[in-house]
Image (cartoon, rainbow, N blue to C red):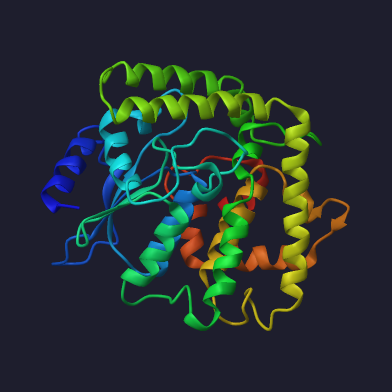
Length: 338
């Protein structure tokens, strides 16, 4: 992309994000302007992943921690959507038009109104698929942890795919049919979340009524949110999502039996481990940790021990568990001195 055009798009988006506490430089290095600019949200699964990679790579970046939950929903602003759509031109997936409870671009299509979005100013690129972005950052940034070693690249990516295609979103927005353990503020917010999101989408679309790029982007996103609302209120759909979670964790338990070290691939911490760290923390945060450990005993002991090691990883502590504004959950208070 032409760098002057990219600069204009970024500058336009940034007019909406001015709070100095949520728009700041991370890991600044003297005399070295940040190469990357990251639009993310403090409790977004995909944002956790990108921040974790940047931390493992010891990279500096401009952080725009934008609010994607009701009532604010700052990721629907036309200026941000225009920047993200520009990045979407480089990926093969069509605009999103359905919902399966996942956030994967490969399964859902390209969502023009979500986070994270990463700008690489040096390369003149806008990156909008979180899994592909993480792989790109690992290869583009010299130094730090080698997260995708060439000799096990296929195996690492296969595990990343498992996490990427897990229906995390469904179990955030919808109640667990075995007993809703989500934090109270989440349960209350999600009662009207999709209706609020659809109203905000229409409100922003009305600002650009004749725009040939943005109007279709908003229309597709509205369709997705309508289908999402129906999905998370359908008990049978939620039971399928929960069953899939349980099966994937059982598979992870078996995978961990074969490891020769602390991590999925022996003694090397890889991007597969980083993705699983994000997944396991979110599951525990939602009150679903009983799948591997509950009051009556530990059911998946290797997953339990693996999670403990992952949650102690400095990059996970900084980018996920203790990222500023991390919201409370009674299920993870052990990490906050509670």
